[in-house]
Length: 326
Length: 290
Image 1 (cartoon, rainbow over the protein chains, first blue to last red):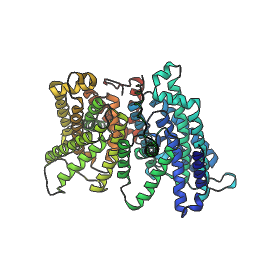
Image 2 (image 1 turned 90 degrees about the vertical axis):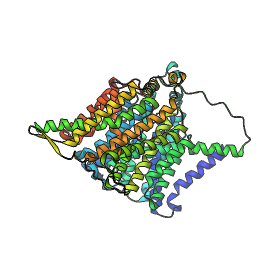
Image 3 (image 1 turned 180 degrees about the vertical axis):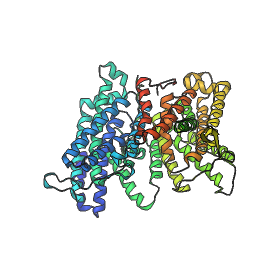
């Protein structure tokens, strides 16, 4: 317990002092990217990890919030209005997305979310009068809440850090709450949960909304970071990247998606400096992790760690097979 | 008037092409219970491999039909390898299998970009089919009519295979009830490889057949995969008839949508899918809910 608190304290201090120990602005920006992608991955993990619902269209929801921000700014509204509108648009779209996709689970859920993600991508790409098509929308300025301008990299980093910590805290609270327990119950034993009197569909729906809220927050941070949004952000590749963050880090763990986001962003930034074949590597990592370390890097490494430093224990029987949902 | 007639012919042509693409997707889905997310990549790979034979990049220059068959065979072999070497390692874990196919699709797209570059490759229609035929005042490209004929022939051949042969009966049994099929001695996992290879070959064949009208370019996979997905959600998994009817419907909606509502064409394309999901989740002719 003490070791865990110490580790968290060290991590916290390291995060707060990032602008002082990294070698330059470029790395502060990489850190900002890691943090807002971590918020995105935390949001997706609510569904994938805790809810057992693999969504392949989350980049679409991320994109809606980003486009809404950019569009509101483009037609002349202020930052506050733009951000509030983007949050409402993101969560409202998530509600629709959930109503359509939660009609099925498992593979059906993947297919429907994939299709919904493609619809959103198609709209961003083709609805040129609204989205500017392939040219995207530029965002000319970053906001300055209470006179604190986010224009420079450090200020943006600290804002992202605050949002990230709030998101992490929110997910931690929700995961430990009765609602979180019920959500994990619907993942493992939907029929029993139903028999116990839980409204499985409603629990999944609220989980979707929570996931959509975090995704929208990440989308807004993203569009202020890059100050540009184009259909590329909504593509299947983007959805797969964030899913890779969750799966690589460890679905259903609190810190897994954060580690996954760090891994993917660092590999992507560093590797794309040397080679052009980022997509190939993304695919290869995906295949390797799914086949070799299906529980993710964080639980996988913990397992290896425990095995190395503790007495060998008799293997527990495999946990009961999960039921198919009705 | 001419506008509507040619739009209709184009729709049927595109529907035929979609059938070649999605019949394999529907069969794989029906049997293995997974949406094969490499299907768009296999289509694109077929188009690139076929185009390579056609333009003589590797000093073998063959005619169009030979190139189409060669591409189909090569990609079918690649499909069999994917099934044997990767999907086979995750028996029964459909979620992991889908993620593996997604990973492979990224690798395949990047490899195509590396090997063939970013410029689109234009493929000429086969000899003798480059012209037009006239019906009254309307001229139709001969090749588009040929695609319709090819789709009908392939559909008939697949129907014969599934309904009139022993292998087809085994596949149908596997689609309907894999456990029972195993009990009566059908090696269902062997069927997986066969059906995956067949679907891959059909997708590759569609790729090269479609190349003269769509050309071959990076991103073709991401354009075609959602279409196959919509066709199969609409028609139902594991059903040849569903794939056929679904392809025609989508062919019409795609072409009419592009012509009449260009900005919302992509959205309109997905509307029937949403309706089916709401009203009849197993699809028009589906055997089970995915």
